[in-house]
Length: 297
Image 1: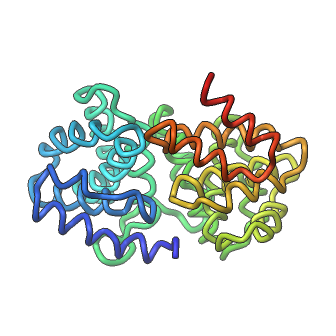
Image 2 (image 1 turned 45 degrees about the vertical axis):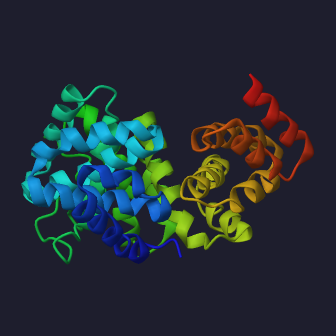
């Protein structure tokens, strides 16, 4: 199942590959369970050789395309916060920026996102760290902390819905209402993106549950929620729910759903033949043809 427990369990695959093959073992990781093999691999590398070993690892990641390098960067963010200590969140973000200066085409957002995700969960010491940047009486903290550089805030808002979901004991409607209070439009969108990805595992792969749970959000964000789940499911290896969502979504959201899905399919296909196979799984004939034409363009 696509759950957090499975994600952490599969870190062991990354541990094994690093211990056995060193930096060259990265190619043997797969994207399963939110790329947890890559996460375990990089966390183990940092624990064994420190952050100076990350240049070699990131350059190795770049050989295998954008999906791999983005997950490596995300895993690095997790590892940096554990390395410097949870109280030193700002230092971990600075290290992401330094990696961005040292590595060409480094996906720095993913690194920042990993730092903030680690701050939310804080489990890489065995249990949630009491030193995390979390305030039970402030739903927007740490994103409203003036010490955080504005360029880092999208990474914060990407993970804040998960924190609010915990605070509100799983009340999705309340989390949606809070995201709607975010004044910066980019950050508000990022908040709803994070909330939609929080909803994704709750659907358990069921298309009806997807629409039921997304309907709990403010009306103007419902289509965005369902489309985001379609993209998320495809990105973690699902090859069924995404097509059902786009086929079921109302006409106002259908174009955005399919064109967004085309883009993800292009990223995750290594050959024209693989992309064509993805297109053939689309349930609506008109959009199946549009998928094929999109590749030719």
